[in-house]
Length: 249
Image 1 (cartoon, rainbow, N blue to C red):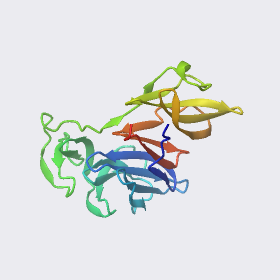
Image 2 (image 1 turned 180 degrees about the vertical axis):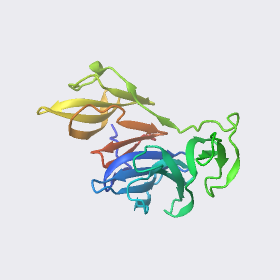
Image 3 (image 1 turned 120 degrees about the vertical axis):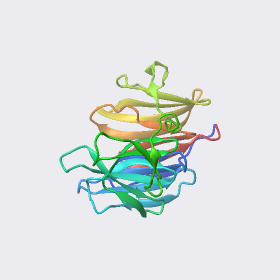
């Protein structure tokens, strides 16, 4: 039985707060935050494992974050104010961590097959329009008939029964997903009274991959992994990105 091996095993400088996948370029973007209130961003090519850029920071140390990613461009947002959760302002970063455009009046609404839909926060009522992600230029008003929802190629696990697993499962949060003949499962166990979370990949009854995701955690964690195309993607110890390719199955 062939054991699976990670194609990406990337420790990051801080807690991984958010990740976004650009399905057009097979790129994953990660937002990390540190106790010193520093936010930074990392871009990794999922097909090759190459890091495009790492620990990229903006002049704003904390009040910024990932909004969306499309066609090789990462959109970062700001906030309306220090005490408001409302997003305002957009900055576009390319794969070389270069700012290609910014507009502090725009706010992001959603992503479509034709690109990003935004609105100008200076005008009411809100009017949605499509922009060129690479330049920030206005293309046309948003048209829901043709600006359809993006297919992200991401699958999320669903709830499963623990009774058919060869582990003493703690609690009832078991997440499971199938890829061809493989089953991917996350579950919780107790070790010396401490709660742990594990990821298992099995081929029929045979275990082909296992990893300990988190130890000494305070509460059970659902949705601990995703499946993107043929890649299992998950976060280990809150700060390590791991990618397991299933392509040979």
